Length: 128
Image 1 (cartoon, rainbow, N blue to C red):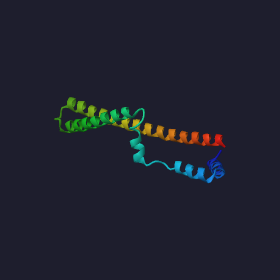
Image 2: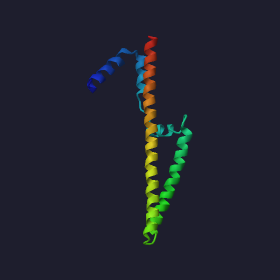
Image 3: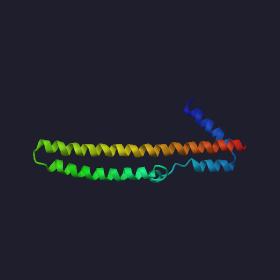
Image 4: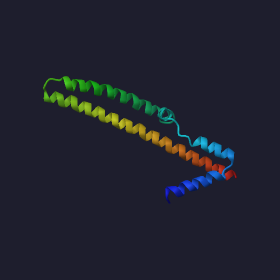
């Protein structure tokens, strides 16, 4: 089934609804702002874990900056450069993992929002 067929099918479903249902469904189709989505991950069942992850990421960022400064300013001591360079790389990799963590939660919230819209539409059809 092509995207055109799906959009035509969606259009037929939308036209079969009453005006009140069309207005309500149109209001649900608006995507929340990115800032609302980002702040939304700090609420709910895993909000505390996201706060903890944020604190850890901030601490890892501070350590990464400190380690980078030490890497640059260390004398030509190869062992010292390796130690501070690896710590910098480790903290930067941890930051990337943290960003993926939050992106995953934002995507999960987006999918759940769409599922709730489907549940609402199914409940609406059962009432008719």
